[in-house]
Image 1 (cartoon, rainbow, N blue to C red):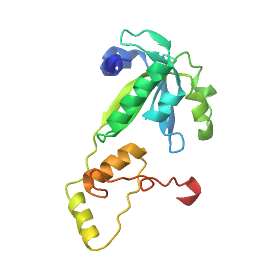
Image 2 (cartoon, one colour; image 1 turned 90 degrees about the vertical axis):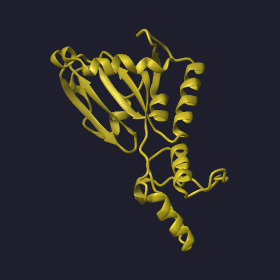
Image 3 (tube, helix red, strand yellow; image 1 turned 60 degrees about the vertical axis):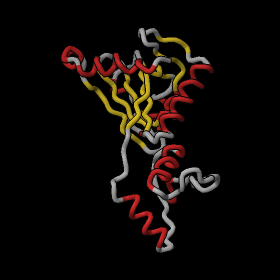
Image 4 (spheres, rainbow, N blue to C red; image 1 turned 30 degrees about the vertical axis):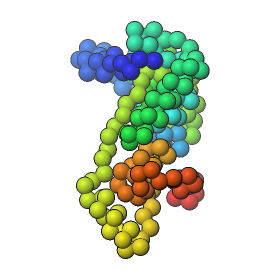
Length: 193
């Protein structure tokens, strides 16, 4: 899918006409377990953003640059997945964007956040956003000082593994080119946090 599929939405959201004709009806708040959030607008569309790799799994269609919606093929899914990996490795925090049309009224949405992922399924993929959130300048020198003092530095993050690894190399937790196999991620469940 073309990288410019986001353009119609950024233009739409900035337009006074859209804001005058469309009201926010409900928000499905971000929940760490599903890694997404969404808003239902009076145009009966649910607008969703979240961790790109998870959003991609929940989409069954894709919006092309001309606005046409088509079934997402395995090749499209792979292309988007490759773009997500490439962006995460820069390191960028990568958000996937999607919509779900023809939604019912807001009062029919679940109030139990454990049911939100059921609503955010069979979506239309609309694009990717990469956000650069650089470490503060004092982080790398502080990590170097810790290493010199024999202190093992551990980073705890909600980022995906590729982004976390790239950030870790950028700030000196890992060395460039270092094999990080079996060093990078320990997944901790909610009960351990």
